[in-house]
Amino acid sequence: MLIVLSGLSGAGKDAVLTRMKELGYTVDRITTVTTRPRRANEQDNVDYHFVSKQDFRKMIAHNELLEWAHVYDNYYGVPRKPVKEALKRGQDVIVKVDVQGAATIKKILPQAVFIFLTPPSIEEAVSRLEKRGTESPQELALRTATAEEELKQLPQFDYIVFNRQDEIDQAAADIAAIIRAEKCRVNPRRITL
Image (cartoon, rainbow, N blue to C red; front, side, top):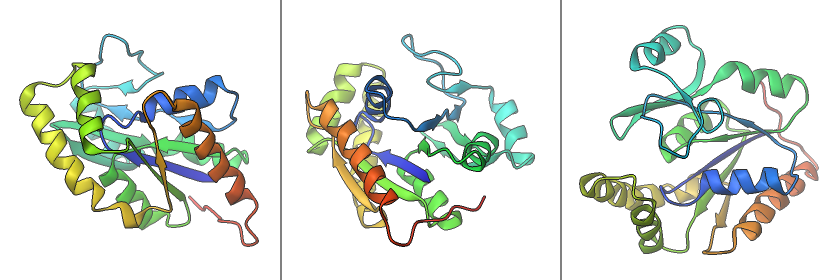
């Protein structure tokens, strides 16, 4: 099964995925490729595969990405090969993408499971971004405006999961419950990549 996790900036996508791993949920997380600078707390090939814009463009040219987007003046993409290999092994796969990336994947793999992760409000998302301290005031304003547009895309998703303050275990459990429920479908989703 391919699970696509998306949501607002500041929703806690990375934190929830990390917590799922810590809690022992077995799902193969595909590491996204990006051209954005690495933050102090991030590790290359763990949080992201950090590459140059030139290398990213080569990946596009060689059709090595399942989807890619130019977001906030940087490129982000999901590498095709590890997704295909994990699915071939029968492993559940989760990819973390922005809302634009989720829309792209939905066009090519509509049978994937699409989950929208969000704080209970845009105000809380903005507060989290401010506390993170990685965005300039201009970037923060852009992300806030983008969040309002992204919320309009919610009907394109199969599920919504709220990541409330200090309730990350519940968000992780909700995603795990979605995966369990999907495995109980009478007509299971089939992914062909």
